[in-house]
Length: 388
Picture 1: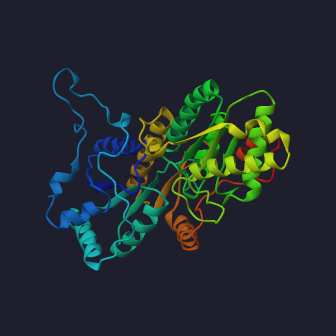
Picture 2: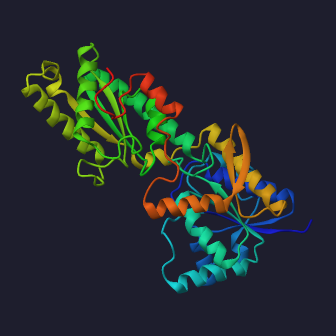
Picture 3: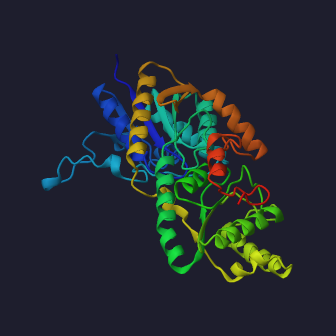
């Protein structure tokens, strides 16, 4: 088999595990005698190459790129690092024709036989359009803490993000209990609630609000939160945990940058109104201290946990295997405990339709077992009044 020249890039928001993918691709490729080019900052790297910012030899990745001097020489640390050593940008479709032309030219300058793209639903949509125009041979690897790429049960970065949020909820539980507070935690999840749901269950949340079940905060939902918190307090526990995904909208069905603060204010107002209506259960918690925590980018900046390192590694190896077999236009996926691949065309069709309709590409199943699990635990999910 001849010596292949392949490229790899990371695109979109960073997440834990990207470097483990890069490491796996480089190691597996070098054993085959292939040359791997690392494209800096997504497709911008091709544009910069065409403009002379880099020379092709500057982008070659080697197995010794992690060597350090002295006693640490040879330390293989790449799989432990978060972020992306290649850099990553999320800029949308290249709007200017000259930029698109430069990207296509940069790809040609490297003479690549294949390109591995590590990206989420938005990145895959954009880069696949470029690939079709430039006749690129591509293999995709899904990564996103939102876990909203179709066909795959898990994407690189999701498990670590769940761990970070779960740890955050664990930590907040003790300060909540110490001060008899309601801790309201806003987590990422622009369109999908997988992160909020998984971490909320694992972290002992009393209320979990996600876009699939609560697209926006109705009066019934807000009052349902009040009922849940009041009943918890009347049962003898003086603190609670609330998790809300950032994709949940306000009562006017509009996006709120800090939807957690908005919900906290609405809970305070509705609790007061319910107390004034002589519903006594609400008069005791009327002055409960609600504190909001926005975890923000902490959710995607942690060292990848073991499962994400493993997933990233097997995804990288599978991508190299697909290239070796000349099976292009595929996406690596995880199904039923095994690594597989699926046609990219099938996924891109779903992504484009969902993006056009401005809806989630792979939402939480409202009838799935995770939702049933939450309900069975007595967690309020925003549907009508509290189960308690």
